[in-house]
Structure formats: C-alpha cells, structure tokens
Image (tube, rainbow, N blue to C red; front, side, top):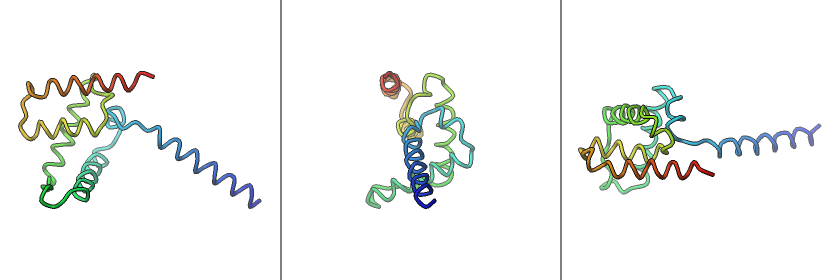
Length: 123
C-alpha cells in the first residue's frame, strides 16, 4: 500500500508540474481571472520588481497605479488582436501608456508584440 501511495503521489506531482508548465499567461488567461486576482497579481508583480532592483531604481506604484494597470490590461486585452500577447509584455506596454508615451510612439511596439505573439503561437 505504501508503494502504491508513493507512486500515486509521484505521478500526481509530475502531472501537476506538467500542467503548470502549460499555462500560457496571455490575454485569454487574464480575461478569465477575477478583479481581486488581477489586483493581487499586479501587487505581487510590483513586489517582485521591488525585490529585484535597488531601492533607488524603484518607485512605489501605489494602489491607484495598480488599479490603473489592471484597467489598462483589461482594455488592452479587449482587442482580440492582443489576446496572444504575454502578460509581461502587455504590462510593459500599459505602463508605457501610463507614463505618457504617445500611441504613435507605441504603434511599432504594439505591432512587434502582435507579430511575436503570432510567431510564438505557430508550432
């Protein structure tokens, strides 16, 4: 019985790890998440950035900024052409918008993100 249980747990862990590897953090993933999850995700992302950089390079986004990023991502992924873009890339784009970069300046970046997403999706 112990061997069976051990084998079962090993298989369960392997299957869980394999399933976790196949999660694609893109617009489809983002759209199915709740508002609370999205805000927590952004706050966690912010904390990760804070831990990876020196304090002089880090500016606190604050609650309002996090909410703006969530709303920006919701709008960004509202365009079906952006659904395959990874959330990290989408966040960089949205933050550039929030920092005042014009749509004209961002247009080439958006085209690049869409092209890369299409290329990554073709197997």
